[in-house]
Amino acid sequence: MGSIYRSEHMKLCQIFFQSESAYQCIAELGELGMAQFIDLNEEQNSYQRKFVNEVRRCEEMDRKITFVETEITNDQVPIPDYDDHIPAPQPKHMGEMEANLEKLEEELVQINKNTKTLKTNHIQLLEMKAVLEHVTTLMDHQSKREAAMSISEAARGEAGPLSFGLKQEFDKPVRDENELKFVTGVVKRAKSIAFERFLWRLSRAKVFAKFVQIQEKTDLFSHEFEDKCVFILFFSGEQLRSKVKKICDGFQAKVYTVPENPAERTKLLNNIKLQANDMKAVIEKTLDYRAKCIHTAAGNLRKWGIMLLKLKSIFHTLNMFSVDVTQKCLIAECWVPEADIAQVKNALHMGTIHSGSTVPAILNEMETHKYPPTYFKLNKFTQGFQNIVDAYGIANYREVNPAPWTIISFPFLFAVMFGDSGHGIIMLIAAAAFVIFEKKLISMKIKDEIFNTFFGGRYVVLLMGMFAIYTGFIYNDFYSKSVNIFGSSWVNPYKLSLLESMDKQGVDSGNELSLTFPPEVAFNHDYGPYPFRS
Image (tube, rainbow, N blue to C red; front, side):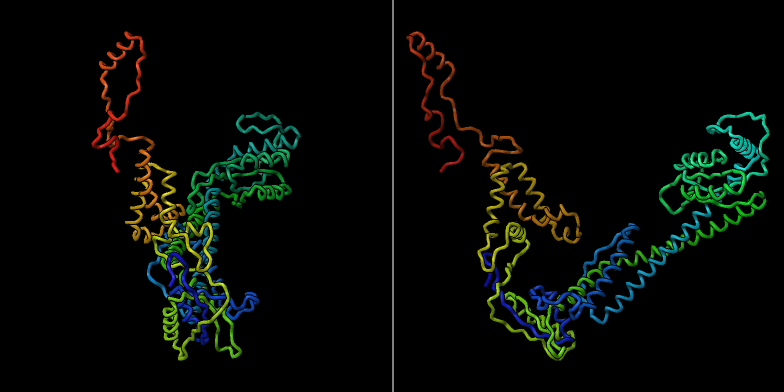
């Protein structure tokens, strides 16, 4: 019989499964957690094993669950934990699970694709609306006149740096305003200055640009405001049009074609407004449906993850088994604690019943010279101290386990180094809170790594706090300060007047006064000088 002082006695067992009952038997053994299986197919790669297709299907479902979880996280939807026990799903339910995940993934992918397209079109409609609203101002007579004069000056070779804020007088003939061509569009405000300079230099001042900032938000479904400008580019001749459009593409400026007739622009603006409102309603309905799918998936995500993990673990374990020549029987080898063989047999019996098989699984104990694994039966108190020992090295099979002595030695040696009662009280209170509310804290499933480190070692910290209080009391150290708890039993039996008279007598007699006195007269002989008596 094993104990915490030595590892459990282990037995190498051979188990024969019928093919139809193997899955359910492994599911029962997995819930029990008392068997360590040996891979009997080490010479085969993963593609040559019997259940490789099932493992691949599980990996594909895992990919889909990861995709859904990413979508849920991006929408900042909380994923509730699933605390109820979930049995391993039956292989016949695997197809249904695959179909549900595939349908959910296809829906989300299609919704994302459609939403992206709709949002892009909606942004374009709002930008077109902004262009139509500002183009009348940009195409007024004064703007065309300035453009004609600037382009004419450039054509005569007299153009200098553009300065649109200054009013210039031209007494030379200018190009006819009706000959001017124009391109309108939207560009990011941060790029507008560089965009204007590049146009001016490339065209040698033969392109006249004007900008108006868009005050309204063009992306109504984004939390960020992107500053944009409506621009109009005047130029002469169709040859410059292609160059201007290429420059617009280079600066990611979107070009929108608008009619020159004001009446047509007004009619188009009204149509754009109607289309934008209709598209906004469609996008909102699409996002509402997506949110519904996301919230439904979030409620089941943890359940799906647990089911898939058990499913994949079972098939991964089945791939370790060898198959007999009839292909109807699976043979497994595993290490089982000798004291738990009866529980393993009972789990195999329950698995056979649940699978509906008429042939039970057979467990045989084998004699072997193989080196058994080390297994200690631990509880929540001893687990923390065993982890400390395992950090330095795991004991060999049936080797003496230093963990029981570490339960006392580790906290005590820490306290010898720490030695502060005040801080020890803080450690004791914190660890006691972890111990008292451990069930509530476990149910919260906190994922913070630092918190879980301290919570896992709560009993270690509890003893460390106790020993720190003890050694701090011995050291008389409370928050790095000494404390006079019991007072002093030492007294001075010699009064100042007596010492002065003795000093005077010594001076008169010419003898030096001796200030060495016996200590016995300085304390009570019945109780001694210290508060503790032997």
